[in-house]
Length: 495
Image (cartoon, rainbow, N blue to C red; front, side, top):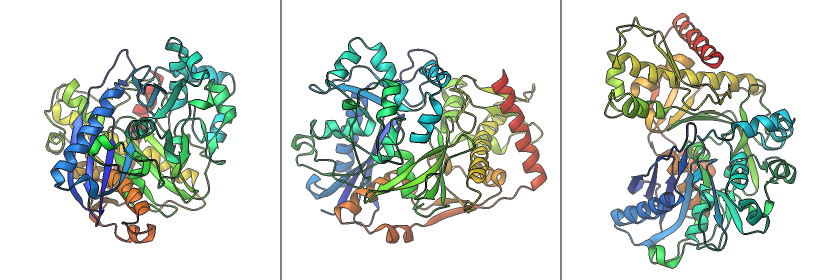
């Protein structure tokens, strides 16, 4: 058994990869699923879609690889974080659609808890802020709004999980109700210093603790798949939230190392070692990974809209047919038009954490067209990344952030976007040879635990760079452009 099956369950699609003994991708499969928007600011998934696309892509990837499922030594699962599923313990039937991490319906719950003076305690224990982004208030909303849900939860009839937990439960036929430390750390319910669910926080959210999954290391035993799913039982050996899996796949194992993933959103993680660093700039203190019972911590900045801004150009404005067109458009944009797009479609994430503001564009003229809008969309991701990196540098002055940013995710394939990113942050940007770093990270966890992949040090030594982008913009232009961005953000928040 020398192969690993990696499941990457994302916000808009599910993907599966078969990796060989040398950590190379042998085959893959991808399937999109429907996004549900029942009200303004609400985002949901049908949990059955998550399950069906997971099984479907796994079977397709295995078939394309030409191997037998019995040759697979283990499965790794990485997932969209903070998204919540609550299901019936006896039947496995979800009580409601999954509430997605982008969903803003619990904004009033967060405001009430903040007004009651709970945010400092929650931040101290969990490293997170009171924001609809995280899982805790989503679970509270489900218990408060789905008929009989709270009574059933208190009787022990309902289970809660992030997407990884739901998939593990389904894959093992209900034998395992578990998560890993990285996903637990994103719920607002987990004490990241004590390494356990916080009874105090659960009481504040009014969430029965018997709903919560068992928390394990990222590389651990999470049970075996049911025989009928793949024709044999396959052990689940690795689990990590998608951004932590990307951090592992980028081999950011040393304090000071930094990665940024550009998918639907953008997420930058800075490894801070064995010490959780409290942010003064409204960043998140979280767990980067946990191995052998020892957590490694990180500072994280979350941008809600990165690749999603290109989807908006395609589906909303309908000025492009695919995201790949934006680079050519940006290259021919009028250099004398300083159009600024603040893509606060679902509010602003770090370091602003304003859930109520909405997107805005500035500097429009009669000459503004698709090229200028595409350029502004790509630039918005660079500006938001600089916001995060400046906050990180301020929070971690004593040790220092290493001056190279490792990038991955769909938008990292754009040379134009990555060059602008390097220009605006005034630092080198490294794009790795292996673009599928999220899947690679969780594959390595599973393969390392199964004994077929190298240890942490050897894996880090194998990381290879494909391209390095060096800053070319002069300081005066860089700072002038960023000053206009900051002005636009503050105008957006005050509107």
